Length: 356
Image (cartoon, rainbow, N blue to C red; front, side, top):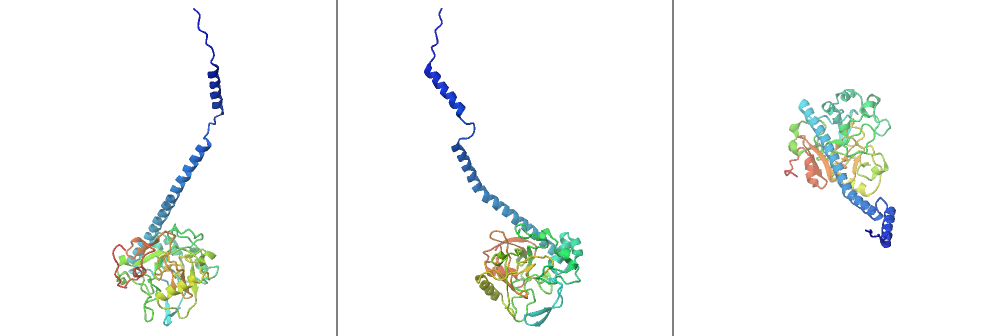
């Protein structure tokens, strides 16, 4: 029987040939439109994730900063338990010659942080300090310290540096400071009602002197270090300097002076803020409650260290504060100035609401 003859379908052959040719010409990768779509999705994801990652990193640094401050506050309690008083503000003493004018009998201006070293696991560093010599010989010179304490004064103590304050690049810097109250650490006396109300003062006090309560009295906080650059003259790291003899004797007077200096524009500024944890004073290891946290008004001090030096940080919205009982909390930049000053005094008797 004869088999049917298959007649080739020319149209089908032609179509199959075109399809085969197209398959050969089709790229194996993504088409341009698909590639642009993928890139767009990646960009959108990055725009969403980057702020979240930055917030997470900022929160982690703030938490680490709080932990460091809490450890310092704990060492402060341990020191007080051992010695019945808070660490001395310095190891020199003052002699008053006129109201508001004092003269140093010695310049052994070692900070309160020095005395906390044994309680922070750094007894070796504490024992290396030569307390029998002056703490500093020339605050403006390149040496920044006598030879006897040269190594110590340039030694970095990690717990004294807030992870969020990354300006410090040399040894010896300090991000944490002790509170002198609303103004100066000298004892309250005639004509100087805003002085001597803090935890750290001359002479040293005991916890029993904190009449407002340990839980409502600020003992420690943060202060950004200086960068020794021109930016310090305008940024929140700056400390403006001015001359006035005798210096003003009220907190509000310094608020007005610092505000005027801020409006007047760049001027000579102290760029070594927080440079040495070894040394005392508002330029290095002390702060006060003249201005609110992270104030837009730049800090200002006289040559005799009278003035405003504020709690300042890189944390968005506020600063960490350690209270005299050892607990640490975050205080907002928007805190009322009257409340902030009340937290700085140990015996002002101001009412403070719970959970402020």
